[in-house]
Image 1 (cartoon, rainbow, N blue to C red):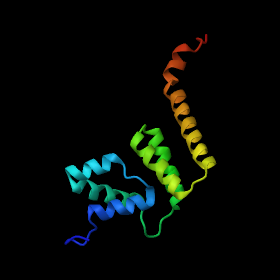
Image 2 (image 1 turned 90 degrees about the horizontal axis):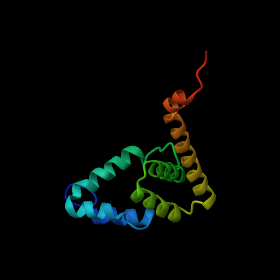
Image 3 (image 1 turned 180 degrees about the vertical axis):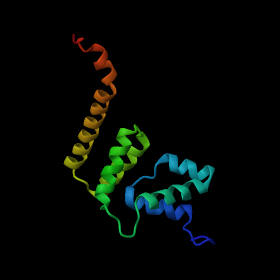
Image 4 (image 1 turned 30 degrees about the vertical axis):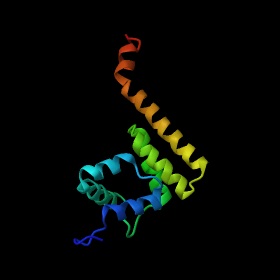
Length: 126
């Protein structure tokens, strides 16, 4: 802990290694530029995934985070959640189902986004 009673970046990194394996390169680079970015990131994590009285278990949180990362095309977050899933021992079948749900959601989005195109192509009714 530092003088302000918060963990050092090195301590945060050690906690991250224990829970998710390798630290994302972007987080390491952010820390080198501005340690406050790491503290803000951890504050946001605590807001999104509280330690006290969580509504969701850790496996569900990881799968949701993975799904969001896939949908957002965030390679770094997909990699981080894949590593975390491995550390947590999440079964392959659950990871594949998560991937398939995201794939289906994105395919559904394309159909929904194409509504104006379908309207244009629809046969005219007299």
